[in-house]
Image (cartoon, rainbow, N blue to C red; front, top):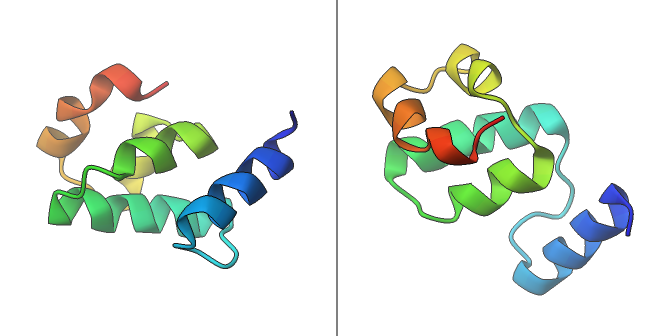
Length: 72
């Protein structure tokens, strides 16, 4: 299954996002980390976000280290 189809199925199941680019996904992941939302794991793994991307977008170092096991 390709990435686009996987994203489409995921979005259809949860109905959280209508369309989401990679940049928006990084910004959303930072917001979710700041709020302590556990659904951030699915978003990070779906887009394959790296620790560097999340840190550059404004996440705290401690929150990124805390989820380091799922980051590339």
